[in-house]
Length: 130
Image 1 (tube, rainbow, N blue to C red):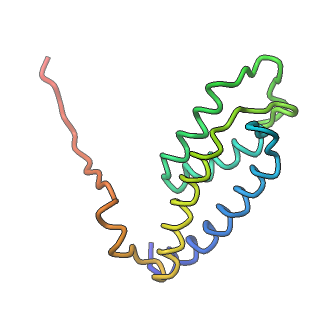
Image 2: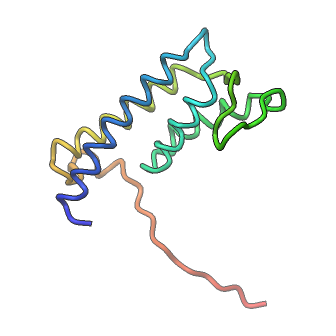
Image 3: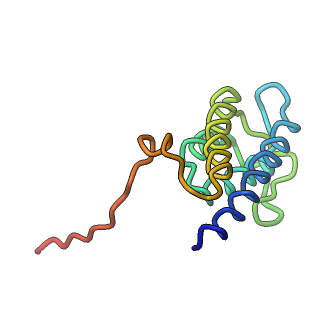
């Protein structure tokens, strides 16, 4: 992916993160949010590999009883609400948005300030002799 293409994707993702976060928070009642909005946010977070905020979403799903709310369409469960750790969700979302904003400001480059926080994964294949 070229730097210019990455920059364009990041600009869109930055807007999407902020928009979908707002959608989730608009459904907030007490400590519960709608399943549909949270699921949409989790899909976006996963596509950007923001696992920490995705884990907060997953914890909300793990605490939810889905039986009374059958899925009427992919990722749609009308009336279903999930208990959300709003503080952790907001902190992780703010961190994700800040990182994407730093990359947008650097026009697609990963800023040097982010380097120490990035975990590099190297693909290795292992074969066990049986």
